[in-house]
Image (cartoon, rainbow, N blue to C red; front, side, top):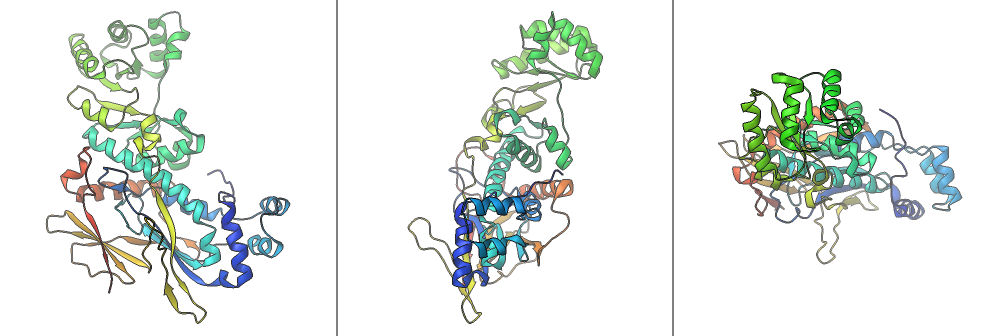
Length: 436
């Protein structure tokens, strides 16, 4: 992977807090921070944890080189003692969290960071910027996959977002069940399957639609996907079949009434003898449009803008709060924010998903300061991600994506069927905060 320092992907006030706590002497107090969301986006029934692997990759590159330190000094962001602290910075604490791909609900303790205040504080913005974006994309993608009922979904949203966000969105989409992406950088970094053939400009480049199709088939083979709506759809389908024959892999529809078009295009393809030629649809799809196409003879969906913008919920609204810290005597003290509508619950949390005898999730049990008692079917949700500064194996790179996708598939299977409905509703299982 291309390496880039991540230490300045943060907010100015993280480092001024560090400076002030170094001066007060409190910077070295052991502390526990937790990332969680107080609520799901309106009407959503569950969320999907994504970005954990990217957080760990970013943590390994969270260093302050001479270049970063000179910037901080030249702009008087922090004083000289703070610069010296940052010069040799290495995260030495531990992080536990929900496995990537896991489902979450309001107040699920998604990530727990235990270290000195200094170390945990300056990671806040980096952690939240990754988790909020990637979890929003994965949550939307999971709904789209559910609406597709087993038909493959392809991520095609790179041109609708910033270039690094595009890579992250492709990764999150595949974790949530998308089959592939159009983004080559995402394929390079994370081993994701990539797909793509041609756009309307390729057809317009040639003197005729037939000439464009002939060129594409000659280059990519008869099993390619031909885009048939640059001019007249019916004529496009007929030309595609004449050029590629019965081995034509698929036709793509990108405009118009997709339900109606898919139906008569299917009839036309069958009449022409192309019974095995698939139909792919694109054109500003979201989970609702995909659901509306369920009755149509569509074989695959290409999704762009709605996916990379979270389909109406571009952030997961996660926060990162200090919940416990040592006092002057070395004893841990639970702390909590009491602000109206933004209160937090003090104390380190442990989480268990209650699973009934039929293998269905019934509740999220969150113990405050202790681990809730678990029955034989229940699942412990927090796993070690970083221990004493060492990122644990299996959570980053291509392997991390593969494992996260497996976790997501398994977790979705635990939910009651109502979770897959697109109508607005309450979280499909409730979070129970348990105190001693």
